[in-house]
Image 1 (cartoon, rainbow, N blue to C red):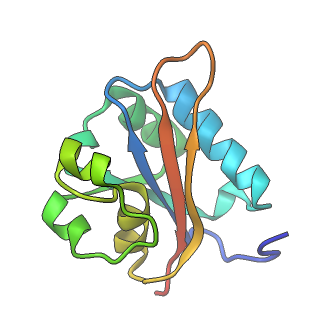
Image 2: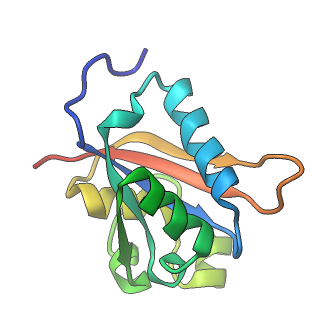
Length: 138
């Protein structure tokens, strides 16, 4: 058990995803990671991602249905955050070496990740989702 008691609406979920990822895949990824780390979905303040992913239909719909905020950040802002697991491949593709971890840290206004990035796939769904979680320090 990672954390037994976290205040409501204090976790920010950073999310990186491939284009046209489904709402179902996002939902399953978040539920899986929260179950793995013994976290309560009721503690989620919102999701954070790269600005070009903020209009992904699956992501927008999932946030709307869940009642969560969706924050987005430009690559330059995400690049300004030190992360434990930067990716040269991600940097080449989207202009920042981190999406999930950096976005979670930006949204939570902290430099400490509660859960490092976790990559998730779900057959037969196409694509993948990367999740990281940070605890808000405000």
